[in-house]
Length: 207
Length: 207
Length: 207
Image (cartoon, rainbow over all chains, first blue to last red; front, top):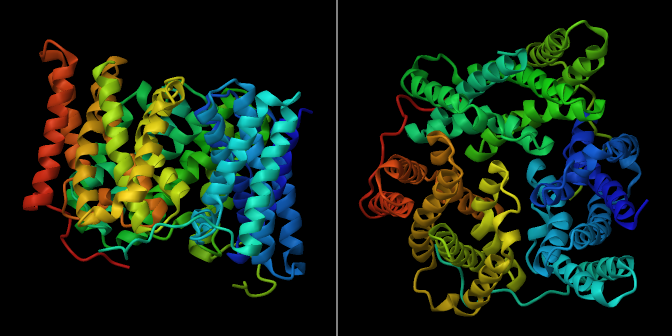
């Protein structure tokens, strides 16, 4: 199994957990759990594969990804009540999945020898879109758009780090791990310490 | 005309009616009716075709699908006021279109000899995504996510029935009709008698 | 540079400005500005390219489009406060971008010798979907769905004009310019004078 496939599996499983936890907050049934878990788990990678015209899409080539997400949904359906604070668990697991998925997305684009802006964007799309669709479908405020937090920015920095590091390291895996680390440190710092970039607010928005 | 093409046409027309009725509730103009009718009618099948990399997409290969949806929109624009309860009509027509579209989606994946999980998922996507996009775009609560109703679950059961039956029947058409019947019976039972799976509610969701 | 590429660039830049102005109303940070600017700028053309199976997608073939959108986001981040009324600027710039994008979308489909309904639909999709995604993601009421305004209808009329004119003019460019002009005149007339089609309202919507 290549590192990119391993990262894909890891992000699928962690994103599936966040999807199932969000489904538990929305009080869905077991099939609803599986649906949201699958959507979150493979959503970002699916958009990446469609945009890059990779055929077949990764979970059509290997339906095991969907099986893993469904298994996760089943486990969470019966254990979600054991989690002390589900929102807190969702935020932290989401940060891990984001970091792993950004690296996986950048890795796919690097392996296809795309230009640097494309590598960065594929990392951002793979990382951010699964969680965005999860939140939009169940009607929660998207984590990705929370003001004053690093999220898209963390994905951007991590993907850029991977893209910049790639030509300078002996093995692409090193670049991907750097990308995942940069993403996660920035996201975690934002959650813990409120790190953020200055936002636009030179004057109040008008109607 | 193959059975899959026939199912595609039937689901396009019935979904187009639901789309136009939703447009009438949102008080759109004639072009708005046609837009929502087309989106609902071909949305699920489009996502299926993009994911399976079928080229060209079914309504590019045969623009008659769009013509049928627009004709439906025109008729509904002038006749929607004759419908006694539009919401009731939407729910029941949507259940029919769901059943037919699930079978059509599973049929396409079966014909391309995909693995069983892919067949099931393509049935679910084809059935559920058109109506989901219809409801999201006009800002209604998606039928697909209504708590305590079988919708995704009905689509799952129908697609699974078609996938399981396919190798055991003389002709794929029989499997598809079984899939449509299972989907519709479960969905209708849920609407009429409140059939549902247990939902997750071991404790109230936290903020 | 072909006229279609020129139209693509023009619509990317103008849509990017509207995206960045919407981001300023949502008080996002610089990366958020770039994200919304890119989404708005290339969203409609991306859906067009995926549906038509054009590979690679236009901004993967030429990442300069993304660079232009990011440069626009940077400029607007520091100058948005100079705009007297941002909402007014968004609406008018959006009308220009709509007109140009409708022509660009129809031009791509015409060049690929698609049937007339497909040409019209690709014009409408390219014109409308970028702005729709921009508004949905930041949670504004979509311009495209405002009641009693010509928007989808203007896109439809412009795309249809381009499709009808194409076989009758010496050069496709003329047809595209006609399409852009028709779209913009209808949209501008709707903004300025309230032009609209009759909407459906034979009786109030029921619950």
